[in-house]
Image (cartoon, rainbow, N blue to C red):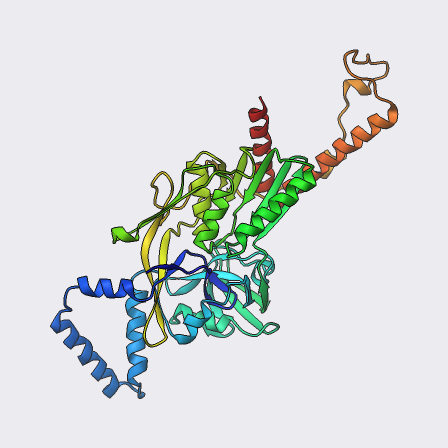
Length: 446
């Protein structure tokens, strides 16, 4: 009987891979064994021959357990980037981020061409603060080259006690030379949901990862936004940029929070019995108010499920750049030896039947990541309006305001303009997303 394994998949302290995981007690393994054809005798002979040759002729003695474990690791690693063998310690470590609190660097990684590729840094962690970027290739950890290491070995070298130092050498697109980054390991406390008001009526919700607490945290933050606004929101920006994913159930809950009905995501594998369809229940926390969802190349797995669900159901406009494209399901299968295997068993599909795997989510509106610089000369000059001219006529239809009230209005508008300018300088993509949201709110009001 399948049982949902409700934690993000964590390979090592502070280095997580976001995915939906199920835990099986051997049913799938038994089922697969019954249907699998007998292994070719000659291939088994070849395997045993190689095993014996290595044992007798390798430069150093190697025990049978190590050889067989390496063979199993290689078999699973050759399937896809996410299938893997987990020894007893690695199997125990997979539970480490259940509470959203763990030690390490705070990056989600996978193997690519023999190097460790950064999928995404986690907000407010040593990796994010040091400027680690999605797409970075880690080529050295301290003085050790990553080439030739397994992902588990590379991860093991990056993790350690909080307060200890580690140096990463990174190959980055656009950089003329390798980038060397010094980091201090820390205890990672992931606050998966944060919120703030961008403007009156316009809320901002940032989800950095999907943990077991994300669904309830989202509800709390939404109530906080409504309270800060003095009532219901006019619109919301949902920021899923650089979100590596996490728990499938959390992605379903976040999508469901803004949907009244219909499909959220479906899972399909080789076995028809393993297919599942997750649907939304009545109740929209925003009561139909417009949503703009932000994604980029660091948005993977669970964050792609949310973006795809809201996009297909025409509940939100998705902006940014194409997402990562991690649309597969991994199942953890415990073994009798207290180890386990992590096996890719299914794919995710959006409500319209699109496969996320290898394709990602294409935004409805592309927003390039630009750096906006302030023009000091232009900022120093304030334009002149008709009302500023000496002897200009007053507007006979408008309510007369005293000088103090008019001054307050002018100061409020100046502050709003300054806030918009600062937002454009610090996060241009969010600035554009907010402008789009304001446009949607106006259209809805009309």
